[in-house]
Length: 315
Image (cartoon, rainbow, N blue to C red; front, top):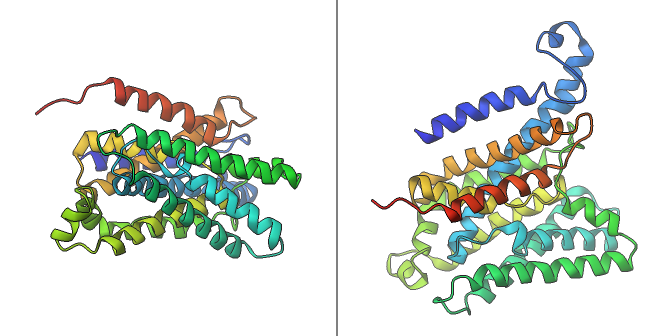
């Protein structure tokens, strides 16, 4: 039932998003003004779809990462994956500047995969009795990679270029410049087929093997999904934080830890949060815009604090 309400709210918000912007436009204009229809197809519709695809994909892979890390306080964009994707894009720009976008995406995905594997290897060595060490190590790990990106960019006089990749915003989304996010959406959808096996991994590798799960294969599939979605999002929109942190925790509070049952709600809430943040960023200082990443940071931080301060109901 929560999924139905979220989907209805998402449909209403998506419809409203098509007519919110610096240029006033009403549904009637689509029939009598060819330029209004062109604006809808070239800008407004792609932007709305990009926000929903990015939000759904980031929320789903954030939930996958939390299960693989066995900690609810990590998410790809702040735990090294987002920074690794930016490092991959920077490397592609420095060494193969003329390469097509899909080549740069593959390089970014490869760098993200290496960064995610490095984080998992690091946190698996931490004592299980100290769960708060995991998010702290993840933040430091991401900070170190981010510092390396900044240093290399500074040496190459590319700081402004890097900031574009690290700031998630949708003002530049147009038809022909967001379609890679459909791949991210497909990757997120594919994780539903391994959701039960990923849920078992939350019990530990030994328990997973005892229940017949191929731990290495499932972990590799989860890391591949995280890497592809993060790289595709950073390449297309930039880094959008907090989605993979807040939404999985909220879904866990609502319906529990069954990943397969929770993924549809996770995807819907993620899409709703990013689309709502983008719309809010459009209207707060119209005709100027506040980046979606700034809005998700504010909204996500407030929601996460509310989740922490509110005690879960027993029974």
